[in-house]
Every structure is written in structure tokens, then in C-alpha cells.
Image (cartoon, rainbow, N blue to C red):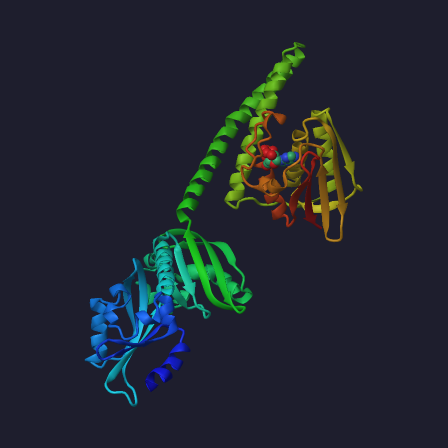
Length: 471
Ligand code: ADP
């Protein structure tokens, strides 16, 4: 009985369920963990045949085979996974066991250590499943997805990447971009990728290049994955947008041609209307009012066409500046005076010292001031004060155009500078014909001069548009 005392002491210190069997598979000892986990009494186990205890739950072919392997074939079983139906519950057990001889005891014994790994295994399976789903998503993702290691070597590439390079995935692993992608394309984004490694910050941008098969445009993103502040992996996602760009180009071309074609007949109509107006005024009839209205509408059409033309020039990069020295304060006063005549409801005041000489494209700057002032009038339908102020700082000239109109919600203050962006103010503003291009064009003009343009506004309290021009 010495064996029991010694082994019992050892057994109780082990938190995994452990069983001692003799060569006839009679349970000679169990620890507390075993009876606790399988919800048995010690007396229901000791000196009972293993296959009979616990309502015969251990009486399975697989367990018999496992024990025979240990007993007859002398096997040392390690972490044998056993799917075990146990009291209507599917358990996953990891079993280790071996044959032992005990000093002073006749015959051989078998020791079995059982670990219930149901939960761990389920978690592993779930993890594996979500990994598979994630990989499947990446595989079918219609964009190049790469994972680099800390040395910029490709660690993972999806099927799309293999389609682009024409290389099987395994041939890409361990390589750098220079080894497998078109050199012209790599040249475009390599600085961005290097910057992502250096700054450990996400980098994104658009790339464009002309290739043998045509033009290639893409949006590219580099996302570093850090561990202890070191780059562990770098993710990269590249969306090919060449087709979208082609369509955009076609649309821009169409707009350019359409606006050119429209301008010629509209210009002649305006000319004939002017002649008619003069004749009717000479005849002193009241009908000149009708013609006046007609001319205003023609002016609207001309402005719309000009906006479209400007836009297509910007898009094709054909906007160029003709710079001259001129007095900005005079230009502002003149534009304000002209617009004041068209709106009696508004009072335009000017705030700033005269005599600010700058070198810029006069026609285009006038276009910007005109656009901002027209907007100030248009978007303050109840009339009121409009203040144009300007001042010189060390490096810049800053111009502000303040109205007391409907204002711009904060979330839209940047968006209004986008192409075709218009806020729907409903009936407050009424029907004005516009494409929502004025601010986009103004922004491009100011940007081209090296300045900035932005809006500040509190909803219902009017807006102020600012722009700067470098001196
Ligand atoms: P639009 O020709 O429609 O005025 P813009 O590009 O000049 O086009 O302006 C874009 C949008 O910005 C306008 O539709 C309007 O919603 C808003 N906006 C511009 N200026 C003002 C202003 N002073 N007050 C309120 N909203 C403005």
C-alpha cells in the first residue's frame, strides 16, 4: 500500500486529472482533479474496471486501443487528442500516458494524464476559422494587398498581386517591390513606402505613370503595424483606378468640347441683343426692359460656360498665370463698386489701406474677388452689410470678405471648395443657376499663386472667406 501513499501525494499536487491503472485496466488510484472534473466519487472509481466506471463513458473502442498501445506496444502516448462524448457533451481531451513499474509492486501499471482542452480547442478552431475567412477575403479582394516584414521584404501577397505581376505567390515571398513590380510604378511610390517605414506612420497617395499598355493610375496606402514601437509588418493596399481616370478624362473632354461649342452661338446672341437694346432705347419704347432681362440671362449662361471652361483647363493642367504688377486695393474697390450697383439691399464697405502692389494674374484675382463677393451677396438674401478687408503682413496679403448671411455648417466649410459641391439651402436662397464650381476655381487660382483660401462661419451668423497671396 506504500505506492498509494506516495503516488497519492504526488497526484494531489497535479491539477490535471490523473489515473493509475493496473495491467488489467483496473483503476488503482485517481486524483481529486479527476473526480472533480468528471463529477464522480473516489469510491466510484478505485478498484473498478475503467470501462465500467462513470456509466461506461470510458468504454470506447478508441480508449481501448489507446490503452493497448501503451500496454502491449509499449508506446509512450503524448497529447493524444480524443473527441469524447461525455454525458451528452462533446469534450475534447488531450491524453498522455505511459507504462510504469513501481518499486515493490508486482506487475506493470499505466499512468494516464487527461487534460480537458474543449475550450482551448474551440477557441483555436474559431481563430483558425476567422483567419481562413480573413485570408479568403484578402484572396478575393480586387486590389493588390501585400504585407512586408520589417526589412521591406514581401511576407504575404494576395491573388490579385499575383495576377498583376504574373508571378505565383510563392515566387513573390521574400522579394522586394523592385524585384517584382514594374520599375516605373515602383519609382512612383517607393519614397512613400520608405517614409512609412521611417516615420512609422500611415502614408497614402495617388500614383500615375505611362506604361506600354497605356496610362496607369492607382491609390496606394501603407499602414505600419508596430510592436514595441518597432515596425513588425507593413500593410499595403493598392487600388487600380486607371479605368475610372479614363472615364473621368472622357467626361472632362466632353465638357470642354460642349462648352466651347456653346460659347460661340451664345456670344453672337448676346451681341445681337446688345444691338437690339440700343435700337429700342433709341426708339424710347418700354420694351428695352425685356431685353435687359434677356441680357441678364445670357450673362448667366456665359458665366456657366466660362466656369465649365475654367474647370476643364484646371483638370487638364492648362491653367497658366499671366503675372503683372497691380494695385490690389484698387482692384477690390472696382469690383465692389460694380457689384454694389447690382444689389441695393447690400451695403459693401471696404476696410484697408490703399496702395497694395502685388505681382499676380490680375484677371484671375479679379475673378476670385468677384466670385467671393457675388457669393456674399447671393447667400445673404435678407441683405445687410458686406465687409471686404485686406491687410499686409510680413510675407502675405490677407483678404477677408465677411457677410451676414445664412452661414455654412462647420462640416461643410471645406467641402464647398470641392468640384460641383453645393449646399441645398432650400427656398431661402431660391433658384440660382450655378454648377458649384466658383469656389473650386477660386481655390485653384489661389493655390497656383502660392496662397491659401478658406471659410469661417457660424451658422446663421454669416460667413467670412479669406484668401492670402504671397508678397
Ligand atoms: P455656387 O456657384 O453654387 O455659388 P460656389 O463654388 O461659389 O458655387 O459655392 C459652393 C457652395 O458654397 C454654394 O453652393 C453655397 O452652398 C456655399 N457658399 C459659398 N459662399 C457662401 C457664403 N458666402 N455663405 C454661405 N454659403 C456659401
